[in-house]
Length: 149
Image (cartoon, rainbow, N blue to C red):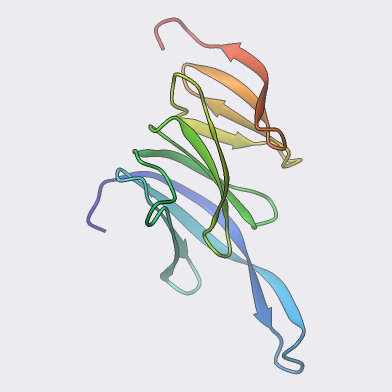
């Protein structure tokens, strides 16, 4: 890759495959994957079993305009969340790479993400912590960090 790598995250992506006996039926499985964030705002999803990049998030008009700070996979393997120096969190479709939604983190960028096991809330960490409701994309709680952070 011809750009600086900024974060590395292990996860699983859901894969839909056709079954051999009846091609109209589809089976859903998981593939181990690594998400690599970059300084130019792109995210590469590497499929460990296939040993290749299966998705590039943020090509063209969609995606981050700044350094990617963190990436997290949801437990179903169907969604990927990312945060960047551009003050945004983006939710991606893990099968197609399409951008589903985004929201602004405020005056400070988020440097880390943590997805709650329920999948309906996300924590962003910057100079403080914010707990977000993903349905409404609104802050449920703010926890202030150190003044020197």
